[in-house]
Length: 327
Image (cartoon, rainbow, N blue to C red):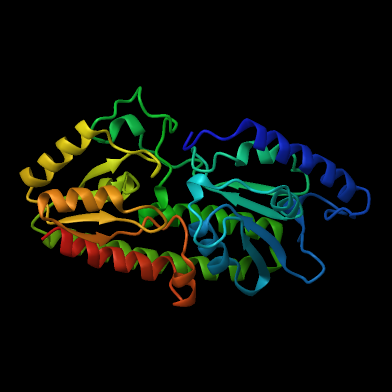
């Protein structure tokens, strides 16, 4: 698991959820009144599918593909680190009313599997967006000072969205699910998906060109969120902490990291949004390296939202940051 959850809080949320769902179930009419979900449109009174997503990249995908025919709500608020997020009872009750719930899976959202036990999945389509993808095992990814037995983050790395080709595969799953729930607008969903896929292909090609021209292939990051990006583009990620940003290196780890920075002549220590830069600052100070932000896109900050940033614009910021760091 990404993070050990409080058993008490999980039980409390589930208990409140079941009570509220029972109350809702006494008055709420069935959304599916004739035929299966795959053979008819299932929309709410405003004519739009109600879609909930577990974190920002899937919210971006759902809004791009669904367009004007969906209402999309992201569960994790702006500025909140999703590794640490726990939904309230109200969050779960709101989610239970959705036509479609989309989550990443593979250990990223520790709360989802428990929450799903309280949902009527005969009325809701649930999409686990990492199903069927070729996932990287955590034990295969390099992290100074941590063995396969020492980490507690599950077998697979869940950060697939940082490889644009894998986000495109996730987007196709979302498109197919939307089309099944609202067949009347399947053609629009397909058209919107093709536009998104083209944008992701262009982004992928631009990353390939940048990496091909870069003299270095190693970069140091504050936590090991960039394994898929590194794997896809032939780069080496050196991580200060593990898959969860809550992991902190030991003094021995820090000493080894400082030595690695000097050995590889690394000029930039790349930190991220939503977590402390303390350790990255220490290593930079000890080595004379500079710091710069590389965004893992696990969520937007309020400043990002106000600036109109999205997945594509932030990934292009990441491209420029890596271009500088790989010099």
